[in-house]
Image (cartoon, rainbow, N blue to C red; front, side):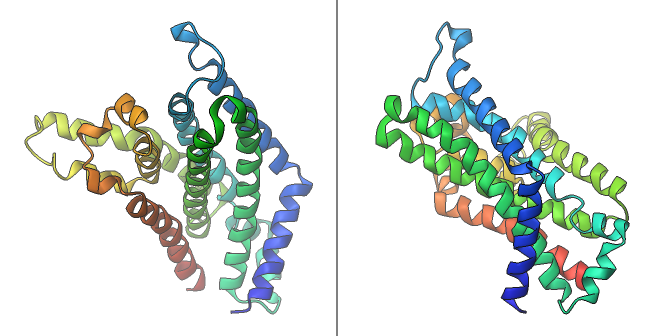
Length: 271
C-alpha cells in the first residue's frame, strides 16, 4: 500500500469539498446553531447569554447528536456508489492504484473536510466564550469538540461502508437516512421500552453496556460524565456504572466505531 497515492487521492477529495464551499457552509451551520443554543438555551428559564460550561455543553450535546451524524452520512453515502454510477470508478481503478488506496484516500479526504468544518464552527464559539468561561471551562469545551469530531468520523465510516454495499445512490441515501433514524432516534427508545416492559427485572445490568452499541450514546456518555452538573442534569449517573464512564474505555469504543465499518467496507470493496 502506497501512502503517497492515498495522500494524493485524499488531497483531491478535500480540494473538491473546499472548491464547492461545502466546508464553509457546514462551518457556518455549526457556528450559527451553536451560538444560538449556547446563548438562548436558558431563555425558557428567563435568562439569556453564556452561562456555565456545564449548561453550555448540556445544550450543545443534543445539537451535535442530531446534526453531526446527519452531515457525516450525507457527506459520505455516495463516495463509492456515486463514482460507480457516474462511470468514473472504472477510470479510477484503471490508474496504478489499488482498491484499498482508493477507499482510504476517499475516506481521509472526506474526514479532513468534515473535521475542518467542525473545528472551524466550534472554535469561533469557543473564542467568544473564552472571557466568561476561562481556561478551565475551555479545557472541557475542547474535550467536547474533540469527541464531536470523533462522532462525525464514526458516522462517516458508516456512510462509506453503506456506499460500498449499496447498489445505487438511491438505496445508499435511503440506508443512510434509516441509519440516522435508527441510531439517533430509535435505538434508545427500544432499549428503554424493553427495560420498562420487563419492569426492570430483566437486562437492567446489561442496559448500560448495550449503549456502547450506539456511537451517539458513546458520545453522550463521554460528555455527560465529564462534568458533575451535567451528569446530574441527564440523570445517567443512576444507570451507568462508573467503570463504564471511563474516558479511555469510551474513547476506545468510539475509535472502534471508526475502524470497524471502514474495515468492512475495505473487505467488501476488495472482493
